[in-house]
Image (cartoon, rainbow, N blue to C red; front, side):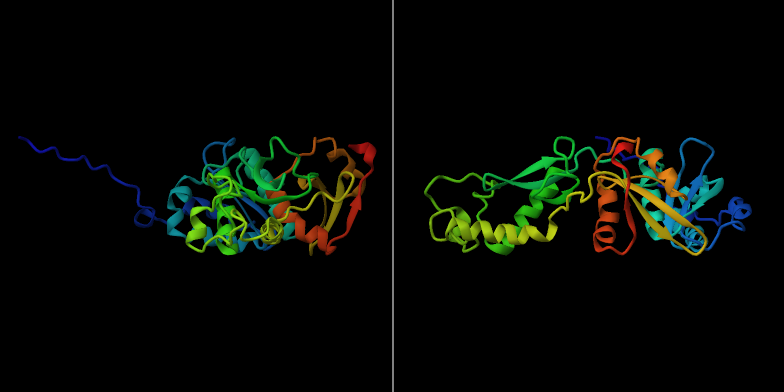
Amino acid sequence: MTKKIASRRPVFEAETLYQYPEQLRPWLSSLPALPGVYTFHGESDRLPLYIGKSVNIRSRVLSHLRTPAEARMLYQARRISFIPTAGEMGALLLEAQMIKLQQPLFNKRLRKNRQLCALRIHEGRPEVVYAKEVDFSHTSNLFGLYAHRRAALATLQKIADEQRLCYGLLGLEPLSKGRACFRFALKRCAGACCGKEPPEAHQQRLLAALEAVRLQCWPWPGAVAVIEEGEMQKQIHVINNWLYLGSVSALEDAVALCKTPPGFDSDGYKILCKPLLSGKLPVIPLPAGAL
């Protein structure tokens, strides 16, 4: 009986094939030591290879060129372009927007997520709700932002384990009415399922644990202009419902960007929530008629 020999295909080992990308040298001299977004382009003008951001474009791009693990991308790169911004916030917002619109080949994060979900307490029990069905910008009592249902339930399970909550009452497993859950016998449930703990106490501990990940509703009636000033320029970022609509240099030009239909954006929320609600940057509400 002949023994089959498994075929071995060559594997691309980035570290072993790395060579300094000499073809990119002509593009390095113009790179500024400023905040902004940079793009590595290949042969195609429509599909970029990689989009990144930094508070120092030049330093960050040069670090890419010295990274063997990025040999595959560097081998395909033919030129580098950049867009300076006023500061780090502008760079973060522009990077997220460009990645979603252009879908670069080597970016894995910040892609569009059609399964974005959160937890909501409905009739005393947590449930998973989706951004495509619920307005996350204006719905109160939403908790967490999750890439998919499994991640939301994993967070709920972690809270239950830490707080000795009942899996059955949280909808994580079946529960027979009037009977203790299996975890109660293991002393991992405080007994709300069988009357050993008041339901109110169980609910309070759940809400207290979820409070740390409560989503903040959009606090303005419409779009706002957020002013960010840097060493070389001032930018006015137009935001609505945590969605970045674009940046302009003059306030009178901000209204034109409000024509874009607003929608909740998880990356925009993560970037903007703390800076905007803390009052660290000037925020100017835009005319409601512009929406």
